[in-house]
Image (cartoon, rainbow, N blue to C red):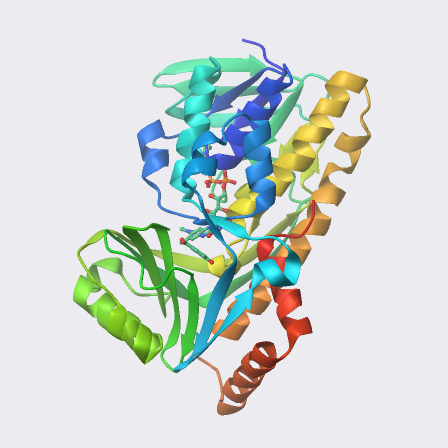
Length: 389
Ligand code: RFL
Ligand code: PHB
């Protein structure tokens, strides 16, 4: 088999890239380790930047997002019983959109099917070959049958645990990492959200987040020890803990119900440099991870896709390789700014096990500064709604 671009990973970054390329007549094949249903069962991001909406429009997959996505003009921050609002719209002129990653992925799979795009599911043993030569190829297995695809380029969109990043030789690849000493326990429930805007809450017991997917589907998180097992958290223990971490007037309004999904996610900051190795490009979680506090993972995957799509388009349509040459540098310049914001917001809002009373006082002082200082709020809002591409 032959194609122009082999895309490894059928998550949001791989699918978005394949659809954008398709619109420009550039052929690709997506290789996904799992099934479509498995990919769609993973509950992850919920907040989209405008840049991602634009890319979904370009990919011809934005109709439902435009209909059902909830524009959010601001978000609430609380510490103890104190709560204040950051007005994204007034401070930056833009807002974010609440729409689940599951739905983004579903829309992209539907668009890809409608376009007759090729996706291979249940692939194993994917190996990338000769990306430093003119004619790279990818080998893999479906069941017991070995297969090979020859191509011009390989896009590694296979997430943090994929094979693409490890294809870059150890002597070339440099990884930067911080692992946080806690995780997020998340619950999805068919209950009305406690507030019409997101609440990022901190308290002496730790962080909590009140989010949503739609007016009858809520998503809540509480910070928990990294070593906790999800089976040890009953629904009632979760709701009790959440109530203790949000302002009393919100806790009183909270409507609880059975969880329809419950999981623990570890928190880490991670960047791999470079993001290109010859004709192999890394995109999204394959190259970088942020703690979810700033809602930036999926959005940063989308900005990588933007740079890579434009680079490939320039190459095929104008025979200009400059976008390809500069892909890693351009993507990383934005990635590191997003890493900084996500690290800052996480450090501000979480309780760290080794934290002293001094550290706690500094966190409170920073929250009070943010509450009272418009320049500080604008800096926060500018990052939250998404830095320009
Ligand atoms: P994905 O989604 O991990 O998809 C990678 C795909 O590659 C497949 N794969 C392979 N396929 C073939 N061969 C192999 N060897 C393969 N290895 C892996 C996998 O099966 C998978 O289908 O990466 P992608 O596309 O880069 O997308 C990244 C996003 O999923 C991620 O950054 C976000 O979910 C992060 N995130 C959030 N991001 C936001 O922008 N806003 C949010 O509000 C937000 N909230 C979150 C989040 C992540 C969370 N968790 C669970 C870590 C909340 C949470 C709790
Ligand atoms: C979510 O709704 O899952 C969500 C929202 C905001 C975040 C992280 C996760 O910062």
